Length: 206
Image (cartoon, rainbow, N blue to C red):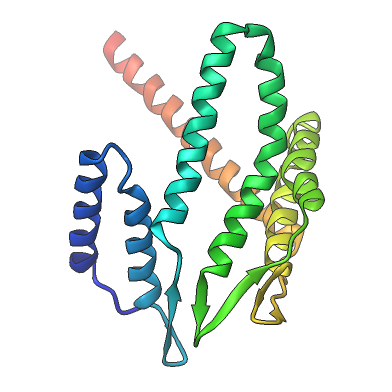
C-alpha cells in the first residue's frame, strides 16, 4: 500500500464537509472517492486494484433505504399494529441487502481489468445471517462464533476473481479461540476496574 495519511486526510475532510453541506447526498461520491483511493494505492504483483461503481447507483440505493424508513415511520404512526410486520420484513430483507451489497462491491472491483464476482444464494444468506444468529441466542451465544465462521466461510467460498473461486481455510475453533481471548481480556479489564474502585473507596473512607 503506497498511500499516505496526509494525502488521505485531505480527501477525508473534503468528503466530510461536502457530505454535511449536502445533507448526506454527497456521501455516495465520498464512498467512491475513498474506495478508488485505497484500491488505486493497493498493489499486488505490481498491479493495483480499481473500483468502477457510479455514485448515482449508490445514491439510488441509499435514497431507497431512506424512503422505506419514512414509510415505516408514517405507517407505524398511523397504524401501530403494523409494527410487528415491519420487524419481520426487516429480518427478511437483511440477508438480501447483505448479498446485494457484496455482489455490488465485487462486480465493481477489478484487478488487471478482470472483475470480481459473488455467486451466493439468498436462501443460504438467510440461514447464515438470520437463523444461525437466532439459534446462538438460544444457546446463550455459545453458537455465535460458529455463526460468524459460517458467514465468513460462505462469503469467501462464493466469491471469485473472474471465473476462479476463492477458498476459505479458516476453522471454527480458531474463531472460538479469538472470541475467548476477547472475553478473557474483557473479564480482566472489569476485574481491574473493580479493584481500582475498591481501592479508591478504601482511601476515601480512610
